[in-house]
Amino acid sequence: MSTLVQISILPRQQEDTSFILELALQKAKLRGIDIKDWRIRKRSIDARREPIKINLQVEFWLNDEQRIQVPPFIPKDVSNKREIAIIGAGPAGLYAALRAVEAGFKPIIFERGKDVRERRRDLAAINKEQTVNPESNYCFGEGGAGTYSDGKLYTRSKKRGNVLKAIEWFVHFGADPDILVDAHPHIGTNKLPKIITAMREAIIAAGGQVHFNAKMTDVIVKDNAISGIQINDSQTYFFSELILATGHSARDIFYLLHKKNITIEAKPFALGVRVEHQQQLIDTIQYHGDGENPYLPPASYALVEQVDGLGVYSFCMCPGGIIAPCATNQQEVVTNGWSPSKRNNPYANSGIVVSVSPQDLPNYTPENPFVCLEFQQEVEKTCWEAAGKTQRVPAQRMVDFVEGNISKDFPKTSYQPGIVSVDLNVVLPKLITKRLQKAFVAFGKKMKGYYTNQAVLHAPESRTSSPVLIPRSKDTLEHIDIKGLYPCGEGAGYAGGIISAAIDGINCVDAIVKKLKLS
Image (cartoon, rainbow, N blue to C red; front, side):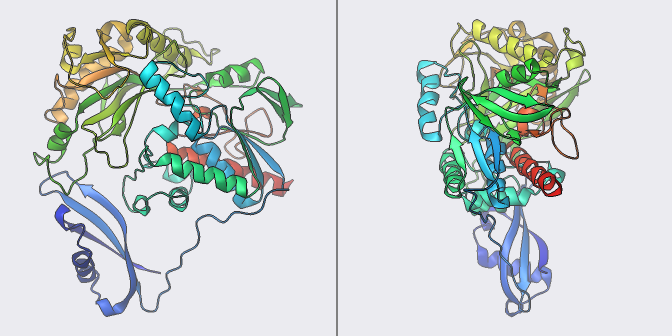
């Protein structure tokens, strides 16, 4: 057992460990000679009112107590063990492979894209040459979309699995231990590639395999059970357990499953724009005018509003961040955001999106599993055409958008391919624009200064989650019709970020372990 105590300090005091220890000892009614060890267990910022405070949870071990530290990841030699196929090397796929190694199974990962080092060249081509490689981009490749979504590790999915274990694995493979402490942990896009490489090397060292440029082009089903897969239209592999962790943008997989008469369903998702402000403005708003406090990190925000029966909310808010081009096809544009570890860019960006259900769409029929995906595709293609059929994006100042005015000029943007002045009310569906207009005005009342013509909207923000669900059993996590097929992570509709996807990967392997032990 240990002793936990809550204290609050001023931002300038957070580096003074002696002061923190003394204050925590006083709060716990302990003396320094009473304790063997201590640590800061949790840290969060309370900026709801002045003065801004740092809330700390401090943990003590008394002299007669033992602090037990168990290694977070203990691999086994799986070279000659039973094999599990994993499609996709994003957070869900990598964590499934790590859990397999830990549980004594041999993971074989097939990733359609390239490793993180080679993948960088294709990202540079999108930004500089506006050329999209459909197999290697911000969504496809080692680490998946999570590699370039800046490593936000906060999740509300506490009931889905062991969040602490998932974060501890990141630390084991090279992440800063502070992510175990911060209430909203963040790694940074600049640091994630090295961590992901270390995960891959650990999988291979244990006897697992990782194949790049290996796209699943067919799935073999026999007697309503997985029998094998085809890779790159040529190579056939035989497996009885297949974890499908292909991410929210692998549209070809959804069409493949449908063609094979494997049940899929339309799923609610969200679509809108990515908004960019100056970070200093967000700091000033959130920190009650104290926007240059050197002891405070770049501020974030979270906004939500019900508008005409649908939710409008902020998504993937990136302090000190960059807006990135995330198309997976040449004839579409897609935006997303990321931040480096220091979050030291002058811009703040966030998706502002409208919740969309299949029933909200004019072409909805219960029989069409692609109604949301087709809506998403149409918006992305329309925006591509409106911006001149390049990877530039349609853009509009915020107040101009609400008032229906074409923006004549723009402040600088972090979006490297560039922006084009377009009336987003014409480009985006009215289902989206009418609600965004009302939401921005409402957000401006919640955050004084947020509603400003210095903010620029970049369209579209459309890959918030998968628009398709691959249904599975709640008990076995297998597909409802196909034994041995484990739909996993964001692409299957069971996760909404790095940690929830990672946990789902772990859960799928645990389900396989349970099934095989009982068989």
